[in-house]
Length: 264
Image 1 (spheres, rainbow, N blue to C red):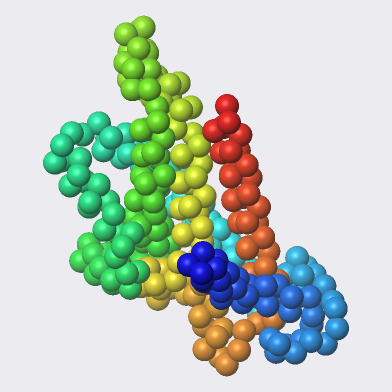
Image 2: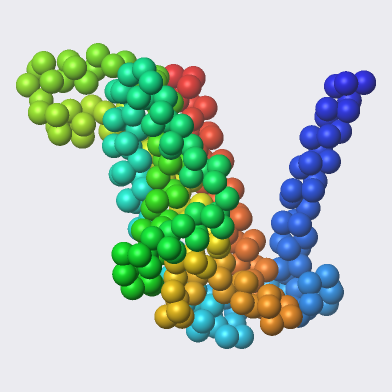
């Protein structure tokens, strides 16, 4: 009975998590303006996205562009900073290491609203003009701990003598980092990059508080503003479906590669 209830609980949880996504995906193939109203199979909404025929298309396309640029820049810098930080934390000993690991976990547990307000107050105090720069800096700050968490297990699996051997054979610390450590840590860095990218992609609270009043829109803030008007633009349904599908494909590829690596 315990096993039966455990399996039933898992399936109910999965249905609650994925049913809304499946619902949106199904109704992305109809032209109905109202979600839940099926007017026949159609791919017109997908055509609108790629042809620019979206209602308010210019603002939506600008929001998508801003979201992708911010996510790519933030994920790239977070991966570099998180990898170097993970190496530094790994080489610490005793209480210092535990303290830094604890501090690294706080931003991940901290509510987004608190993080957003804190960064907003910091930028105001530093007299930073809020816009692209502040949003990117904010995204880097909350994405970096996730990269650290992704890279740390790879450091634990790596033979620590490889780096020392490279130094003994005449490599400089920077050469040993590029040619020895980075290749060993690449799977963790890739996982951290994708995680940082997805975290930045769907962030709302931090972006909302740090974008300022210059009219910078990302996909999350655009959807929020659109929902406040009394409904969502129909083209958002296929857009959400495409984003979910792309992320799902990336995760499948990563898991398959990881499984092959573990077998080797």
